[in-house]
Amino acid sequence: MPSNWADKINFPLLLVVATAVTGLIWLIDSLLFAPKRKASVRSENGELPILVEYVQSFFPVLLFVLVLRSFLFEPFKIPSGSMIPTLLVGDFILVSKFSYGVRLPVVHTKILDTGSPERGDVAVFRFPQDPRLDYIKRVIGLPGDTVTYENRQFTVNGELMVTNDPRRYVSPIDEREVTGSVQRTESINGAEHEILEFPNEFPKRSGTIVVPEGHYFMVGDNRDRSNDSRFWGFVPEENLVGEAKYIWMHWNGGVLWSRLATAIK
Image 1 (cartoon, one colour):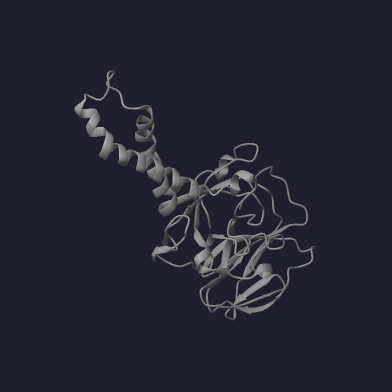
Image 2: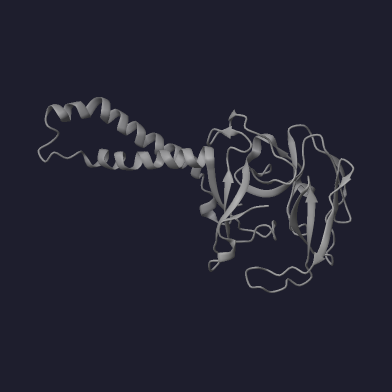
């Protein structure tokens, strides 16, 4: 989901390195230099060396952020409209890192199996064609599923994902109707979510596919304006990052208070 150069920085690697360096300095000081300072009553003014003082301040904070971000929840910002109306440009979301297995930061190796995606989940994953990029889409097909897309509707294993209640889409940002849009309620696994269509635009490619083992078929809720599995294929299980759970803030030139602290459906 990168939107600018800052989003493309390998922040997990920087965080791991920073935590390791500060922790190593603290450990070396504790083992080699701290005993000498105590024996000599530290220094004349009784203060720690400035580097050690900074390390002791930053290391616990870095360690806390590393554990929180790597194994519990990670924040993301939505930069594109591929998930409208579920997610808007400028939404800040929290992604559960333990929903689809606990993984080591940077190397992404799974160390604990805590669950798998279900149909209808909104999932964040590393883009298969460029793993440096994070994408967010809705899970439509699980491993082994037969998925058909035709006439702007999905059929999974012979069961039609029902859409109903067509209506014009009014953007929550400016409360204006989006020209040419149709909002529908879609049902999958008994759970409902909203999708957006543009019936006057040429529909996305159609056809039937079988999802390979260990892979997932992901689609944006903005069905006619989403770059997703209908174009570039499947998401490998090892590319999963986590399940999008909450919108904790919205900022796109201003705060949209109605989006704060809302669950993602």
